[in-house]
Amino acid sequence: MVLFLILGYVPVLLLVCLIALLYLTWIELRNEDADPLVKLWWWLLVLLTNVPGYLALRIWIAVRRRRDGARRPA
Image (cartoon, rainbow, N blue to C red; front, side, top):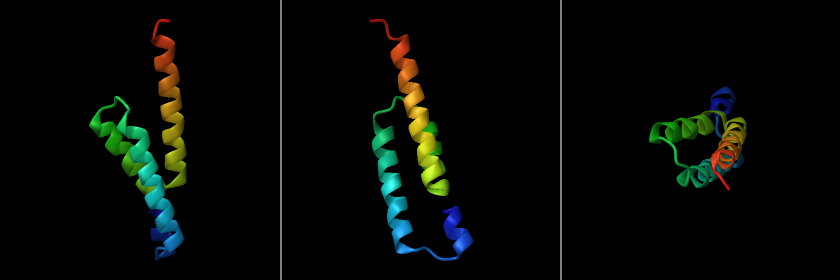
């Protein structure tokens, strides 16, 4: 969205990419055991920053899953 505001218009390819990233965000967050407010925060971050926000989401999920896996006894 920030890029769209800077450009002043929405290129179709970038709009399709944004929709795809939001869909991927939904897929990643639907099975996460997180507060709904946290999920909403990630959605808004991806909406506003597109690829950097999605990359941050992927890193957060990887760290969270690794930490939860380390806590779980074998």
